[in-house]
Amino acid sequence: MQISVLRRGLLPLLAGALLLASCQEEPRRLPILGEREVRENPKGGPADTIFAKVPAFRAHDQNGQLVTNQNFAGQVYLTDFFFATCPGICPKMNGELLKVYKQYGQTPGLSFVSFTIDPEHDSLAVLRDYAQRLGAPTNANWRFVRTSKDSVFTLAHGLYTAAMPDKAAPGGFAHNGTFALVDDQGHVRGLYDSLNPTQVQALLTDLPVLLAEVKERQKKS
Image (cartoon, rainbow, N blue to C red; front, side, top):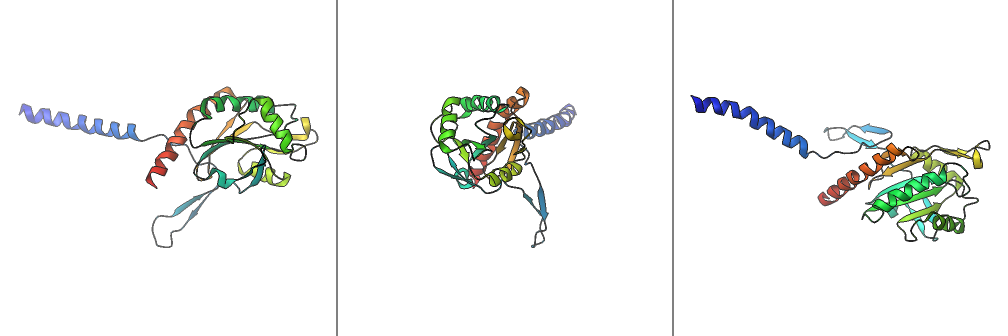
């Protein structure tokens, strides 16, 4: 009788321990941001959810190299939008991005991309000089890029970043200091206010989470 009672008492404890272990083993995942479309499965199975992706782009970096979405296929990348003559938030914003780079810049599978929103002024030579003055690395791991004005504002919109010409704004452009974190499939997985230390810290916490997810996905493929 005592053994039976002990067994009955142990079973719920064991079940609870197994449940707790399974919960703890489930890794944290970042959400996929933006619009999504639910499409019926023609074979009658569960519906497919199609998530928005970063718009396709063609640009050139400070070293004259062509940069497209395909450069980041299978990689995580972190982006921001700036302009070289910005008298407002850009120095602070890219200073924060430099801090992130110093911590994670040598991580395999991670790149950094800064898009100028003033391509008419920001030639490749200007971008190269800007990167050097900022103290950014000279290798291809952090690209300062320019594309057409129309393309860059479309891209900013696709990355959920506010950026537009505004004659009343300092420097002639209105923009915010958002960092956008993009996964290996072109989905935006995080948005962070570079001027908010708490959100920059959240980015530093989220980066290894996303990198681990991508690494695990690639192992399975």
